[in-house]
Amino acid sequence: MGIVNLRLISANIRNNIIEMLKNSGSGHPGGSLSSVELIVSLYFKHMKFNPNNTKDPDRDYFILSKGHVCPLLYAVLAYLKCFNSEELYTLRKLGSKLQGHPAIDKGLPGIEVSTGSLGYGLSIGAGIAVGIKKLKKNNKIYVLMGDGEQQEGSIWEAVMAAAHFKLDNLCAIIDDNELQIDGLTKDIMNVAPLGDKYKAFGWNVLEINGHNLDNINDAYSLFKITIDKPTVIIAKTIKGKGVSYMENKAEWHGKIPSDELISEALEEIDISKSKIT
Amino acid sequence: MTRIFGMKATRFGFGDGLIELGKTNSKVFVLGADTVNSVGINNFKDMFPDRFLNVGIAEINLLGMASGLAIVGFIPFVSTYGVFVSGRAWEQIRTTVCYSNLNVKIGGSHAGLMVGQDGATHQALEEIAIMRCLPNMKIIVPCDSIETKKAVIASAYIDGPVYIRYGRENTPIITTDNTFFNIGTANILKDGNDVAILTCGTMVYESLMAAEILEKKNIRAKVINIHTIKPIDEKIIIATAKECKAIVTAEEHQIYGGFGSAIAEVLAKNFTVPIEMVGVNDKFGESGDAMDLMKKYELKDKNIVTAVLKVIKRKNSTKHC
Image 1 (cartoon, chains in turn purple, brown):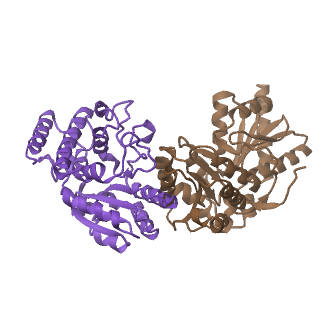
Image 2 (cartoon, each protein chain N blue to C red):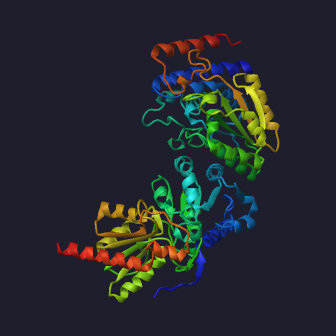
Image 3 (cartoon, rainbow over the protein chains, first blue to last red):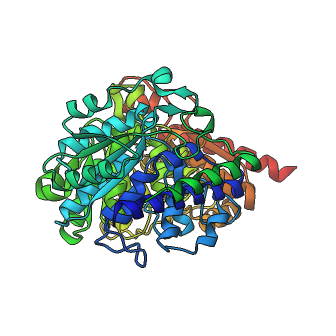
């Protein structure tokens, strides 16, 4: 799929995220918006994924370690017709399959495992990667984390193990938007330099602009031909990307805009879409 | 008389079960965390190296990677010391394994005071409590190495998370290959109707010894091995309470939240009778010889006898009211 189409899809996904959060009245806009291009490129170009059979044994696996940005994942899965897009508006409502954090027990197609407690996804991904290698198969495993999430000690247990076991079928993606709930990541608990840290642990490190679809495409392509090492894509992003009043502001981590600001956001996304050529 | 068929640590029963599974089920995968030789999984490692992983001293990653293996269809068994696997990795067990109902089997070795000289840091005394409160979790506390082997094999053939609690020290073998074993079904080991001693793990043997002492005092105690603590065999517990009208529970674990509490929950809801609980009474352990510790912390047959005499007194006084 070409870059123009991916940009259009990204704009539509941003629109869906805002609409969903408007409806739910709670959730996490900032991080959902910052990861859009990373996940759109994955699902619409790079991942082996069959929306009609989300349990296909030959699929690539996606683990949303930063589970709070599930509105993004739900929007992507609905866009691919894994389920009826009307269901998006049940987000966070009682009885919904679209829980506040991804929940496998609710039966939403495309969810691999329940996540939401930060710092768990990479270990799960590493386990899947070992299993796939033992089965002598070629499925790839992608795990999306946040930069603040790198503060969890459990991440580094997994980072160590993935390199030790040479899990070159595992791709970690860090949405490095430099913000967490309480403020700037560097002020709360500095995780930089992430690239050097992962390199020191023996990973293939790719540092990119996480909104540039060409960069993202190159990074996923490089991951697929890397051998003997797991890959981490450290993607510099803008929290709240696409909605200017949210951009680079920690306060939009888990806050829902007023009706007026929602309209403003949707309008801005609409205008950005019209400029895509 | 209680027959003893030798002495063997339950950790070796755990290992035996895995070997059996390794031969018969290609999906069984074992993960260790640097304690491979001490927790009884080294033979599996040697025989099936392709289905074995040592993740180092990293219990959180141990559970995380096991979860991943379960997602692609393996039946992972993880094992390390009970304190670490149940405690350090508790939230992974809760949120990844149990919430997603993944087919991960957890072996908590070095259970109880009998770990001995290592002292309180390594003596797991709280796992029943902290595993019991998790939805989807099943808990088995086998009484000897043969029952541990059976528990391991049976757990591979039920879907979802299972916690198996086992120990390091040599303990008496009191069951045989032919003894009936079914997850969720308690075994009556000795009949009697004056009192019932409900027990699990290492305390099953102590309870049988206690019953022999009581027999000499003309007290007939029923002894029931409740190896599965979740799902617990409510039917047999209620029937026993109705028949004996006095219950003593015995466990090598903290009293609060443990096996005795599980029994008390069933009885409080269904049929109340006097209960006395033998277990570790809200204390940490310490270094010492295994049997000396069992004596000091009042987990011996004579302590069960004391509890029985007390509960019978309560039973009789209830009758007279």
